[in-house]
Image (cartoon, rainbow, N blue to C red; front, side, top):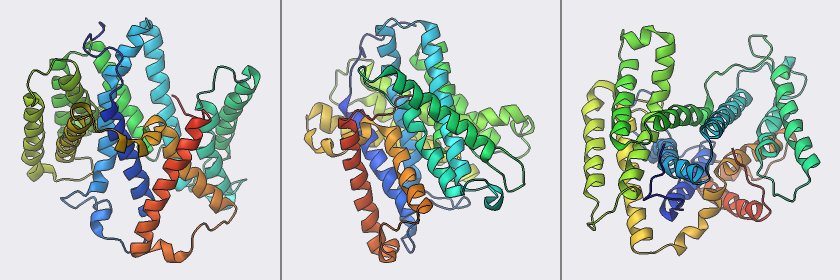
Length: 396
């Protein structure tokens, strides 16, 4: 695979800004999910509803950003002269880590028999959320080597112990992937997309072909009595290609912006893909509907179109007009996305385990609850700023 000379090892602030904003909104809507009596447009739409809200856009936006970052990540490794073995190992380790963390998070939520577990489910959940921090923390070079090993391998041993301490509601010991969790779905999408990107050497036309393939497989997987549904392993792959479609769309848009010289002020190829994304989404809507929960192809394509518009605006504002100072508020999240995703869960299970009530019930309903969710999201960003300063950063 060759280095893309137009990309080099750039740091695109508009991509970081989109990541930071997405994470801020993600924390907001996750906290809002526990608030009663909020408008439907601030919640996920039901699985059978042919519609989507901004909440249903958060997950695809993150997948889209993962895709946008892939060409830069590969270029950075090629510039460091990393061998193919090193790149493949890094890819599989990152995907596996996301899948493992996702499965632990899902099992912490439900599916256990509390009366048969040796430790209370709240403590189990606290450890499941907290252990990835010492395991995958990016320790500074001057950090004691022995202490780093104690923290990392100790965290791994705790996760292994948690697996065997888990008693399912069926009475069986050990966890199962009831579903993969958000991080797990990101891990699978990342794995399929990166492997393909590497095999085709980041070829632009090949990535378009992969996007089309993902949409077709997603459609067949949701079509009753299709051959994809009758082959279990193929249905499994097709289900994850649903999300790989969004990551591949991010790669395509990233290459259109940064792997070529834009001679005109308007990036017409990107405008063309926005039209194609929306056209595909609305064309598929009568057959599958728009549903984030079902992962329909119309949802993925409309989400890709909206994400492209959002990024184009940020690109114009930050890369062209050089208006960047406003984004400083979101950058702590952009620099440490995995930790800020995990941290609210650590806080939740800590308060549950020790029966601590952070806020009065007044702030768990309606407008006060919405305000609290915004405040909580802001607090998380401030905490991340402090943690980043002290080099507590998760790095897969």
